[in-house]
Image (cartoon, rainbow, N blue to C red; front, side):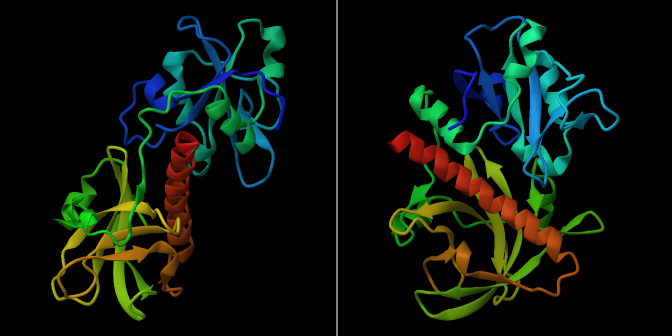
Length: 285
């Protein structure tokens, strides 16, 4: 585990009073003290390589060099995060720094997962309000969890911070896929629209491709308690009741024009549920 200058970790959502469905809600802020006034921060993030970048006054607005580093007050943080390249915003770390600029570079680093876990658990961050994503994939109780609600296509376009899997002319379009049901040993065609947050619940929009005039549904994405597999539950067959759809058993049409974009967005979706799992497991330790 790397040497740490910071002593505790808070979420940007709580610190900056963001809406819970804001994409930067879970962005970590690393604190060096308990003070509330005259705070200063720097912002670091990662791109494709292993090095980290810092927002600074270079030509691009960021670089690997720890020179001309931009310093932000609390009120400047959200706009500063928006200046990070979109593809890197999920990697942002906000670091509090001391007021003495001579010490600045000693506090600029990028924390690895082990260090973050230690800060969360070792420093006893308050995890009382952490969302529990674990469910029983075979439980009838899940059917009553508002997990298969019909919703129109137009309604999806109006959801704040909706993440479509596939876009055509800046409009969300259905992403076709096949689900290989490991329980019933059947293959069924599905369409996926995208994902979003409803409160702390991660939801996926989808519909079966084997039913005439099928409605778009909105289902909670969860983690099976027994197998730790990620799934959502819904009426995928023309029968009463619901069945689990395990995400690892989905396969996609490789001929899709923007398949790379769709795959990247689906991978991001998987990372969201992985993060829910990680934080929930910290609480259960």
